[in-house]
Length: 385
Image 1 (cartoon, rainbow, N blue to C red):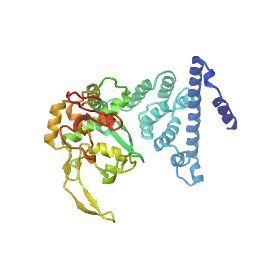
Image 2 (cartoon, rainbow, N blue to C red; image 1 turned 135 degrees about the vertical axis):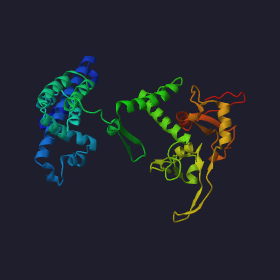
Image 3 (cartoon, rainbow, N blue to C red; image 1 turned 90 degrees about the horizontal axis):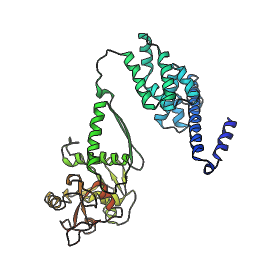
Image 4 (cartoon, rainbow, N blue to C red; image 1 turned 90 degrees about the vertical axis):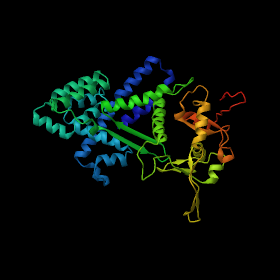
């Protein structure tokens, strides 16, 4: 192990600027192979630790919990290592390719995810030989792409149930959403082919409808903006099911002092799902919102709840939509039903809720205007950004 550390130290000391393009690529390929070999050794070691109950040494019941607690792996990554170690016991050829660095950890996990212990038992009951799949998968994994191996792995499912009924596609659908300490959100979903087509078609329609001049967003950024816009459209339409007798909505709670303070004001507001926002972000949300005034006593209990009212009444919104026709940010043509009514002078700072003080802005460009850009409408009636 000390020699391995020394070799890595020497490798890290190399001056990459002294390498040619070809040498950089050769080095990259070698590092990938070495990374695969290290991942294989980790998988093998974790499996041995699982069989010998090594985690008990630190008072833990499983190697998965040890990897999470002591090696600081994410729970999903720890599960993959443990699952791969169990699966490779049934696929020695694939394990050898992994150990030689020709097979990646992701490829091994693909196999391990498709061949669970119950599947191994079913294959044994039906007389399906895993050895043939082992040889084929090891050869494909070493010479073809991840997607090719994915197709080959599906053949195992067909071998177990060649004449079975078409499965219910909804049973395999999964959607997980994780909220982080700063309120940001990450997620993952697994969909069947038809469900996936529906999602892609809906997102693609919004991506293709919103391609303003000078757009430098990556495709993943475009997809993310389209996904938020899709949800925004549904929330604004009022057609979603109610939640505890009220329509689903974005709820933001902020102190009046923070709302009127022109500074950014970090961590000044909170959302209904527990995220924290800056006062500046709360002011952006408040541009076109429903507002309720709540007076709190010194003990934090409500003393008075005022009437809820729309900042922008429906008749004014119709007038703004009729005048502007679309998002007024230069180069953008997002339709009116994608847009908020932005106060040119914020209402919390004394700006009137009037036609002259209003502008239609889509969600993305509304954010831009609250982060340094400005839209204005001179006497000639043409919007300028």
